Image 1: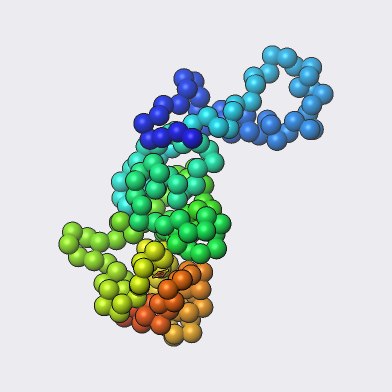
Image 2: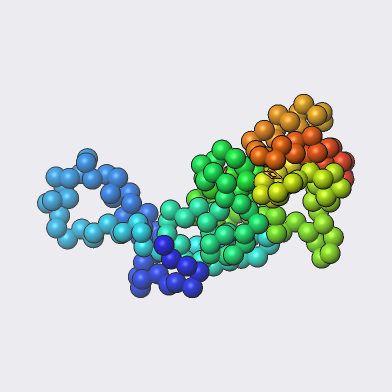
Length: 204
Ligand code: FES
Ligand code: FES
């Protein structure tokens, strides 16, 4: 796996990688033709780094990544934005939740390449100057965390929950926040926090 400072080998481009990958996928169907055309270029190694620009919290970040790198690993390992947490790494706990556009996603299951050209917002991008985002403030006001490990994901998910129009009742909030697990069971306080922040978020 590469890092932010690594450079791709000379002459390697994403288009070439994709063309190489597509070529690999077609091997069973075209094996006979391939053996007849010895001059065809060899497929690119998918482990080779690919240049990608991610827009994170309003800033463009140029990276050189293994094509299999997730958004979560790009954030934590390459950009040192460790607010988004790795809980299960299997899309089951919600600790890694970030916003891509207005949509909440589990970043452990989202490829960084697929997020190129879109606005990624993490917990680090919410506060403005010294002012917490209304959802962050509501979590503080309502003691909506204990160990705090799930909290960044809870807050990102809660913002999307409100904007989706799913914060009208306690039952709705519980339902639409059910993808975010809290092992400390701070659920009643989380629901209270979402209810507190919802009006302010909705008025913009
Ligand atoms: S770490 Fe992504 S859902 Fe658990
Ligand atoms: S506050 Fe500890 S896991 Fe949620």
